[in-house]
Length: 386
Image (cartoon, rainbow, N blue to C red; front, side, top):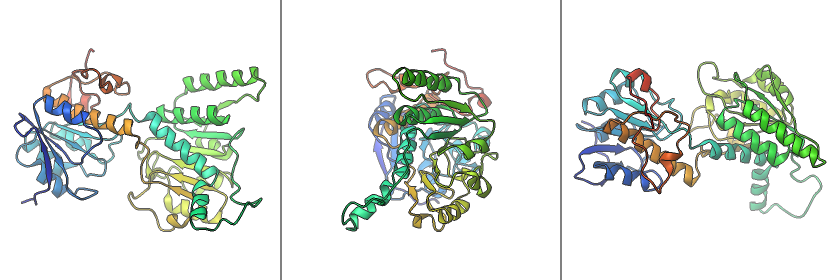
């Protein structure tokens, strides 16, 4: 028998039993569930990552739906248990769902939700922050200052890279990649080179219009270029930010050979998925090229870093906080809760999961729809006409 875990209960007499494997930011998501007659049980166990056995204990004998986290292993064992308990809904509080075996969910008829449409600007902002922190060696300088080593101004002290007029490279110019590009272009007047299987027409039009504005103001206009290959971006860009999806084709997308193509003083930023970079090769490259810098929010074997990475002064590393703004995290919690609630109530699936403002307006009731169900077509779920 699974060992019991600690929980906090809201609306104990609610008709539907919903479990959240973690406490999540804000209270709106809680209120939305209990207003719809849900008994909400929030796990308060003092563990960063719950085991499969912990989650089995939370599911128990009767459970209508679960809100989970991307650190959890949602596969055959958990989906079969959820199905036996009468559950038909699970949602990650995340856009990604690499931790979810969707085929297993399909087998047991469980809808799998995620939370796109609310992380774009927040994630792009962190990528821009890492770019600037790496370029200007902010973390190194901060540590130097706190250690009491500063004895006065010196001409060579923490000399970094100027961004203005340099070239920013974007690999994967979707919503987040394009938002990041706009920040770097408008904020630092950088030129753009990007690689994507699809043409980023709106981004190109923005850069063209901004370049015309700068020219009319007597400044050097910015330019854009769509690269024919990823290698072209790696060779030409001064700052490169990775925004691909993670699948078999993008695993170790940046490896030893491709790192060697980059400029010696280039900056590489990753706020997408850790395994798109061969982290062992990256550590070796950082060690051999001290002026090469990297900013990482994600890691290949998260939460662990490959040996040697933590010792690299030319690496800025943060613990997967790209979505960690108050508005975004509260929005993610709301969307995840509404995915589960919507399936329980028999609501259709929202037509555009990347346009979710209607669900996030706190001054009105959300639409009667599931914001985003990734396996909706396989399960044959109806689409909202709202």
